[in-house]
Image (cartoon, rainbow, N blue to C red; front, top):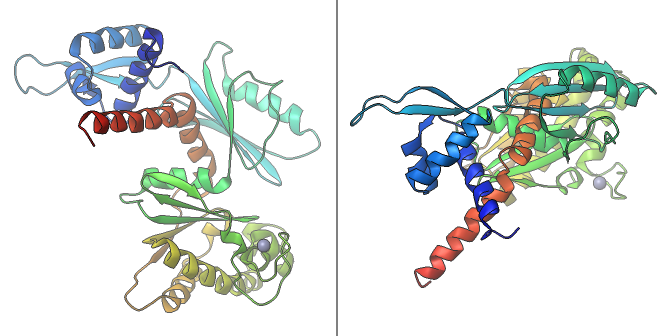
Length: 353
Ligand SMILES: [Zn+2]
């Protein structure tokens, strides 16, 4: 993209306005200060965005000096994003507005009619054909929906989606290691406001035996993945696994290698806390206490790392996927982050560094 072209510059300024309003309502003057664009230009941009239905006026800012100014907000209804959570046995489809609220969702069992079922559900979720769909995020699997709906898509790892919805709920998320514990085990680390995938985590050697699909032996994945725990316990569903005494006994055996792998990871990352998401985050508190105890005893005495369970529960993946779809297709967060890095470099250069 050529940033010096006026139409591109205008597009970028519009994105800056959207991102300024993402978490708060502001007046034109406040937006102008926040995005560092003069008041006249910002006024013109905002008027057009209000006319297009992207923004709306929501009331007056409190009196500070002079006459009160109108506050602006993102209009939640200007369009939608879809999120699809592709699980082994069931698919769920959710539709969210531009502020990330899930408006509706539906789950259906996965059968050989996957694509017809998906098409019917997407049509229903979408509602009116005239409703703008900014984009679609699919968790766990690259389903080919190009013939069903014409909108850009991203395919996400389960851990990315689940951790994103937790981050929204946390007061402090920096330096958190997120573990998605479901059919498989996935890890991401949140550092410098960025989610970093840790593809090696499930293959940390955490016990002596057990062949892993990666070809290694003793990997965490081979010892404690949800699929492995279901297989060992003979239970058919996670609900059974975590609510029956023998199911929980099997989980307990998986907690030891999980704690060993966590200890290695938090030490090498200098992580401050661990959050468990996914199917196994529904484990009873006693299991989390056990995991905490084993982790603490594997760490040096001065290291205090807490383990907690996801707050979003079963909603985590579709909610996080919706937020990531908005990041990508509505707020264009990646593009703005890159631009702001370039702007910093340019100002460093000008100031002679
Ligand atoms: Zn492995």
